[in-house]
Length: 93
Image (cartoon, rainbow, N blue to C red; front, top):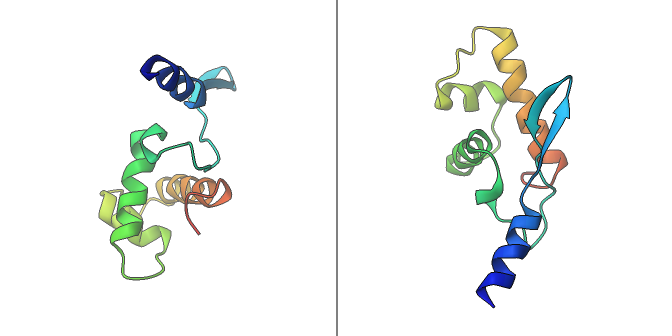
């Protein structure tokens, strides 16, 4: 039974893909069988920061908590893209 469960979890894990010739980790859609631990560490940290907030948060606030240099627009936009990806895939609302 444990071998079957391990095989199912391995098949549900996000698989690396190719974008622009670089290997990237795909963020899975949130479904009952997919756990938060299957997300890349950066995304897990983002979810933890958002959970600690008392209400809605802005990308700048999340970046400050994560130690991102929010004065650099490019770094903030990267973080905003990750937040949008988590929302689009059902991990946040």
